[in-house]
Image (cartoon, rainbow, N blue to C red):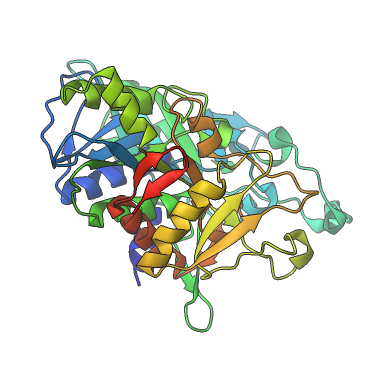
Length: 431
C-alpha cells in the first residue's frame, strides 16, 4: 500500500508552489527533462518532459515512439481552500498582533479555528543580478485563529455565521514580536530589505496520519485535490512508453477560484503545450486535430463519500465510500463531463486492470460544484470523464479518506496511460 507515499507528497506540498515543485522532483527521478516556456524545445520520441507555469502549475508529457495519433491525459489541481496572507501584521487590541488574511476558495471556517498554523508559499527576493522567486515554509507552530469563548456567545452551538474580516484573522503574537518579514528573511538567508513581495498562504500544521482500527483511513490537510495530483502522477511515472499514443499529466492551479488565471485550466497552458509538441514533431494542422479527436482525458478531483452522521445527504442510488474504489462522477447539468461513452471506456480499462469503480451523483435537490473538466473542455475539445477519490470533510482544514483509494486511483491511471484503445469513428473505439 502506497498511502505513506501519498501522505508524504501531501506533507511536502503546503502550498501550490510546493506541490508543483514536488511533482517536478518526482518526475525528474523518473527521467523526465525540464523545459522552459521561454526557450526553444527539442523533443525526442519516447522521452518524457515537463514544464511549469507560475511555479504553481505543471504539465508533463511522455512522447510515443512514433508521431502521436492520440493522447491519454489526466488533470488534477494543486490549490486548495485556505487564507492568503496580505501583509505583515494587522494590529488589533494594543497587546496583540494579527496577520491580515483574505479567504481563498470556499472553506469550512470552523475547521480552521484553534489549531496550530503556519505560512508557506513563495517570496520574491532581490539578488545582486535581479530578482528570484524562492519557496518558503516556516516549519514551526506560528499562528492560530482563536475562537470566541462560549461564555461570550452562548448560542454558538446553534450555528454561527463567520465574518472573514472579524472572525478569521489569525493571531500572530503580542505587540513587540518580530515581524513576519523578519522571520522570512531569516529563513531565506537574506536581508529584510531584499524581500520584494510574496504569495503566502496559511497551512495547518497537522501531519497526515492513519486512522481506524486497521489504519484503513487516513487524515490530512489538502487531500482535495493533492490525493488525485499524486495518484495521476504515480500512474504516469509507472506507465511504459507507447507506440502511437502520447501521455500527458496536468496539474493546474486556481481551480478553487474558477480557473480563470494564466496558470488555470481556462488558460492557454495546455493548448500551448500541445501546439508546441506538434510543431517540434512536424505535425501539420490535420494531424494535430486528428490526435485530439483520438484522445481521452481524466478530470481527477475528489467526490463526497457518504457521511456516517448525515447519510441522508447522499443520493440514495449513487453512494460512494472510502476504499470502495475509483469514483466516477456524473452530473446532468454537465458540471462533470462524464457521459456514457467516456464512463464506459474508463470502466472497461479499470475492469481489465482489476480496479474497483463506484458511481457518484449528487442528490437531485443538491447542486454540485464544477471542477476542471468542464472548464478545460472550453480550451481543448477532448472527450473527458470526471473521476476521483471518495472523501469526508471536503474543504475542511483537515480531511479524511480511505487508505487504499490512492493505490486504486494510481493503478487506474497507469492502466489508462497504457491503454491501447483507439478511435475508429464517432462513438466507436477498438481496444
